[in-house]
Length: 165
Image (cartoon, rainbow, N blue to C red; front, side):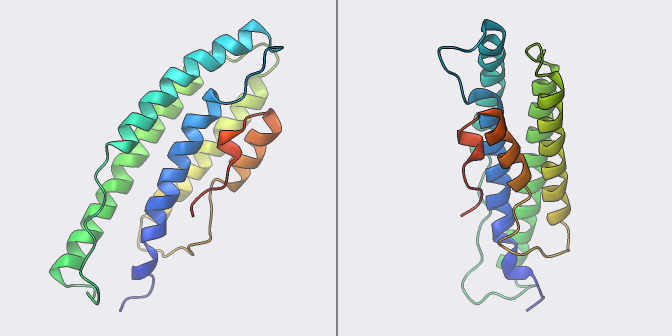
């Protein structure tokens, strides 16, 4: 069996974690004492993130090969094609959503912090795109870890939750 073949499944979970993080990044947090500019930002971003979530949820799961399938078997090739398509389509959805999130004016005083947060999300998306290549990744690699830490420091809750299971 080609090295890393069985390790590709966690990449789909990592993509889902980034999608969840993107959804949560702008739609989390919120307390009664926040300024109205931040509340308006969260409301607009939440609508963008809702669309990201809907689009990523609608992506079809890869068709898994029969147990014991080897690289080159028809089922294994179908899985590899499906997974590559999932990653490509998921990356496009996340990049579109990230572009839309960046287009929302940040609350006064939060511009740099949100820009840095979204820069980190962009790096995580890039890491997932690289992981969909032939270079195998370890299942415990989580390209969203720094993003989630920074999101938690900003006061966001859901996006700071653990990544892939």
